[in-house]
Length: 448
Image 1: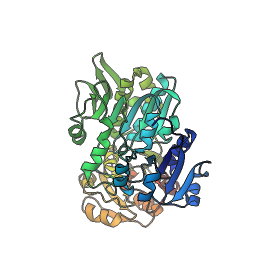
Image 2 (image 1 turned 90 degrees about the horizontal axis):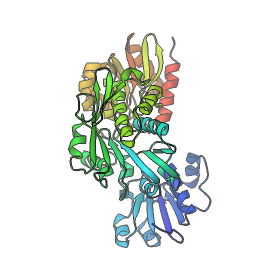
Image 3 (image 1 turned 180 degrees about the vertical axis):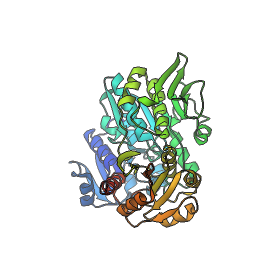
Image 4 (image 1 turned 120 degrees about the vertical axis):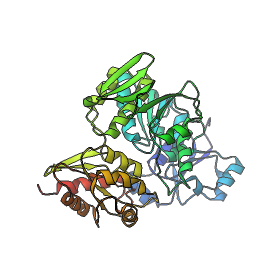
């Protein structure tokens, strides 16, 4: 992009990544206009701070007449490309990039990128901890936490970055040194025409990688393996189902990382986090970290101390022999399946929220085996009830505290109650964090 002095940058979306991008571009000398459908007051209230000084703001989306006054566009991941005047931008030769691409073009270090429908925040944080033990300067963020552009211009050894399909839609030069695709299950039907479009966005992460890069892939996920068959990066796989000639796999009570140098063992009992899904996450993290040059000792040390992330199969409390787990981040069917299969005990599932249009029927088989009962709430509850009827006893609730009370009544001593919604939170809450906090409060209010 070169010298930005005198160039006009239009940033679409005034969320966290948009404002971080605007601040960086203004610092580099660009004239920056931020557009958002919300009012300035609403944006600043959401941010908890004013629009940066020297950055212009306009309510609304970009229109065709704006194109002639624009040098380039930075698109926030929460805004679909279809909201832009794409044909006019293309005709005028105006580039459109995402915040991830902007951050990558200015990052001074190697990049390890993690994506997938589920588990990416846990794996990103775990890899970040492992890498921070091994290297002097490590950036950890991206879709998780701090936007990538915040690391612009600062020398780092590695950037460990969670990336989403929304971010990957607007990349052209993004090329990580190590990239992990954890899984692919249906999600974001409200954004994509079908699963193929969603999967194509995810696998764009590998587009620019060559044989000097490493792709860490889930050998147990046929969609992952089929849709990455064409990539040029060197592949290291992981599996919880079978032994692999190279890569990470589960062998009895140990996780094994196998390379040309031999086998390394990482005891499952040495981890704080529980559940088969977290064994899978740990195997992925080991493969990524070892590909980065992290020593086995540093990887084991982080596994022994990593407590897990809030709202991701997080233990809340035990009441009357029933354990309650908060998986508010479980916003799709794949996440719920992983949570269900991670518990050997009978499960009472609390699910429901804003309907994203996905098919809930893949939950039926697992519920029929694992669920004592299901409690449904939120906008999607009626359709969920229709698609899950007969798989397990179902009860409907009007509120989250009511759902918690209903689940507690249905559970028996030795069971687990898991709040894993399979839906987004926006029908009743601002985000999954607020929803998870509400679940915690409801559980803590249950009588002994």
